[in-house]
Image (cartoon, rainbow, N blue to C red; front, side, top):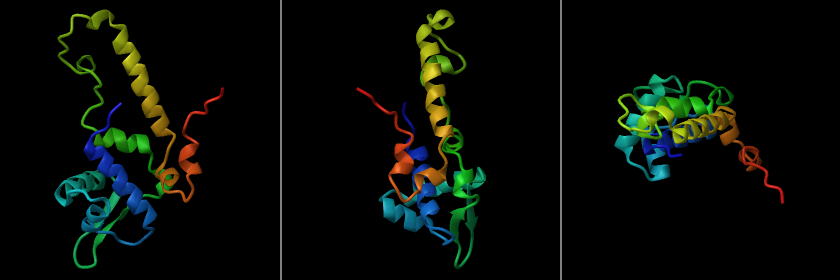
Length: 146
């Protein structure tokens, strides 16, 4: 599975805002902290604002903050909102030209894998990602037994 840079930046920005408490944060601050393009980050933040994840306050002393509590921001919802499409392969979209499409078992398997990927992300909130302990992330990793 692959997520775009747009979604990666969105998740990073949310994590940064989630660790900043009620303090207003600027796009410039986030861009410098992560070493990413301010212009690209501005587009990402605008999308986060439109989606209702972030609140932007204009003017002197303005900045960004979360529009909801971290526990109310579902990671899967962010990924779905930020990704332009969740088409892993051509046949997921309209106008498929593949001759295997009507009976393709790969399409079914990839659809199940995508659903599983999103299900895991739906179990995670921003609060899980901004926790002080690595254990908040580790609880989502599969347990491997010998």
